[in-house]
Image (cartoon, rainbow, N blue to C red):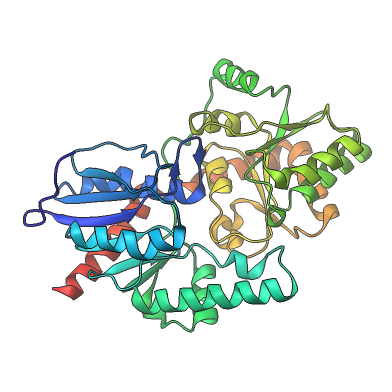
Length: 384
């Protein structure tokens, strides 16, 4: 690995721990989209990516560098080890795609707060929840004061941050996430069938992509799907594409308890390269989440020319607009009716395909990456 030359280049340090092999997280995708454009757009920048022993960086370039720092204690790694190495590497600005930065940095910093999910939806109760909220609010308040700028991904999240942390609006910049060009309509039915077979997907299907945490509201989707079978005897299957985790267990239990095993498929983790084919092959895409800071999967589905149904909560109306059907996600009936309309009314289905495809074009990786670069350069100019 070449050594950074701080006299010649603008050196940007980045927390890259969300790049984990076999687990392409939302934050990992956010960072990947930024760097995939920034590396070529700013050849006079050098990007130093800091990771731990589990980090696998899926990018290469003459101006990207990776440094592995073993992590045995997260708190120590965050605030002592990383801070020392950032100083040693003469980093000019530190950018975190996460909602935390090392304290007492020698250089300016930018952190990203995607949402305040853990304060709004949590399984903790009583004293444990109050303690968690206190520690989270205390630590993030200090970091927000320390950071030179806060990036967030929607106006909804921006309003949440201002309300909870009493941050001056000028310190927050909204940069919408972007949809990679990788997501596009696939019209080759033979290739779609090959990818479907890889995951055991048969026939026509309704699709969900995401994890199985309670706020994703997947159980409500399964119950609404059950009503479609009972009331309209539909033949479409329900495909739940997401990595199996302990959160999936109660959903799987409901499926088996109601004898839906032949109708509901849990694919487990789907490779990023395969997702456009899975999206394109679906009749409809459903995302009934109760809380999203942004909500990328509906836009990915739209970019693949698949009509979407989303909940009417948090940032989803802001992102999807009128290009998708918005429903009360707490209502099984509301969701069931929306799905039936898109499955049974071909003209309406086609209208939402067209509107969704146009809407997705507004959220590009280039705009996303340029927004972050503008934020970085704005902070650097202030420091000169």
